[in-house]
Amino acid sequence: MSGPELITLGCRLNIAESEAMRAAAADADDLIIVNSCAVTAEAVKQARKAIRQAARRRPEARIVVTGCAAQTDPAGFAAMPEVARVIGNAEKGRAELLFFDRGERADVHVSDIMAVRATAPHLAPAFAAHARAFVEVQNGCDHRCTFCVIPHGRGNSRSVPAGLVVERIAALVDQGHGEVVLTGVDLTSYGPDLPGAPTLGQLVERILTHVPGLKRLRLSSLDSIEIDDRLFALLTQEARVMPHVHLSLQAGDDMILKRMKRRHSRAQAVATVERLRAARPDIAIGADLIAGFPTEDEAMAANSAALIDDCDIVFGHVFPYSPRPGTPAARMPQLDRATIRRRAAALRARAEARRTRWLRTLVGTRQAVLAERGGAGHAPNFARVRFDGAAPPPGSIADIIITGLDDDGLTGLWADGTA
Image (cartoon, rainbow, N blue to C red):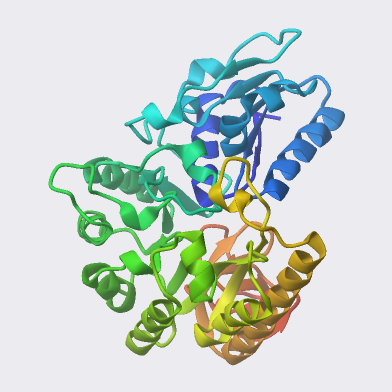
């Protein structure tokens, strides 16, 4: 093995930061870095499970735990016998913390994330393991949704200067990456903390202007209420911006949205999607949805389920609600776990049915697919395509004839390939 082993859980921002740590510790073959997530209680359980499995598989390795779960509960992870070091989110950029002799007890390097003002001092120089590159442009969140612990893991919102973002993307394009994904905790809040208060739309415009060799630009999760006219125009009119929008919707009932302290109404979410699809009919909509939020009754749950059809959500990310300590929602009247699981399963089934109907409409079309390792890739609308027959070289963008679908997504033939 060459370099550290990375186990990355959670969001695309974690993927970007993992690559930076991989580069920083390129010579540490005996190191396993677990980059954790804390968005749900289940995510924290998965981090602990991954740590135990890694220790059984490589008992000689040093295990470093970082990410949001480590940031919010450093003592809990330091108490695990498998863990050698716990590093906070603000410390991910300190390469020296990845080189140490394993001691008897795990040491902890976690600072007050709310005091952090800088972001992305450790932008990844390369993404050798990925066809697409992930670039952090924003971190932290100034909003306080009642269910969310992430601000305590990531701190307040802060943005990366546009010049630094452009420089990093230009370097990635020079290395051969055809697609770049802009990531952040609250991506649409980009800019107010920078001189001149640029918006996310202005950042995207600057990237497209100053990196003409960039073939495809994709945005991670967006807050629908913060899509202004400039960003809307880019999402619907710029060919290099991919026709795929993932929205942080969370629920489809106005009372639940209010109790979540979300800033949009159900009608606003539906109107945003209707505008997007009217301006760019091929755009694919993804969304985060929480099942079983405290006080949710059957009618409220039905409103959230109906949102999948009303917003034509073809990439539904469904999370069963779990109380996070210290959040206002944890103090609200809770639903029983069986009800939460049942509603989550119903949401997933409805989202999967919507996705399958959408995929069927793509059979017979040609898609420009970004080829990845493993004989598959993603179309501009982010539909996964498995190659039947010859596979294009990883990292290339190939013309694929869509021939059918299977349990994982679409299947297709490389138009220029040979059987």
